[in-house]
Image (cartoon, rainbow, N blue to C red; front, side, top):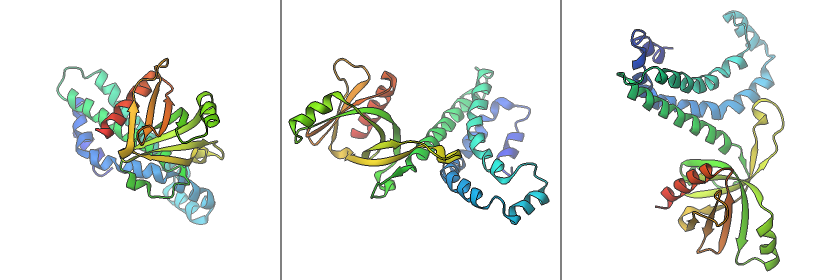
Length: 253
């Protein structure tokens, strides 16, 4: 209200130039990630104290038609709206001054949305002993079918592993890849969000990849310690596989 809105208002006559406002404030937009991470906590607090006299009195004094939780949801809705507005503006701003800034602003906002989405999944990991922040930046997360083949394993275990995949949610960090099991959602609101129980992780320093697995364009291999452990990963689509393989290759190089 004090800064961003005023900057936007400077361009009322030249809306195609508002991309610059977004780019100037992009560092401050990072706060949305923190805000969304805190959302489950604020919702939980609100559920505990929503009927307190203090909040009711605040609502009455401010003459608010809605209760506080409706306003707490606004920033979450807003960060998703910005990208829609920028896309729409780009549609009508081809080849004009400011089009490049609008495109760059859109790319940056989409990057923030991805970071928000990824971090909302990351805070739902349970059972990990260490500090997730020490694993470096979270680059990707997603659900896959996984088959394992361990050299040390009993041959029967290996045979079984070939046929039945496990459902695993993978979190790719700069220093490690985490394998988690997605737990069913329950509760309401943000508590509906899934949680992930940590199973194991692989240090990226000892990881290798095989980009193509015969017979399936959606599969790739992650192997560990010179193929002592091999994980065959099946992505939902060839495009998702390509994105992951590229990101893993970047980390390894």
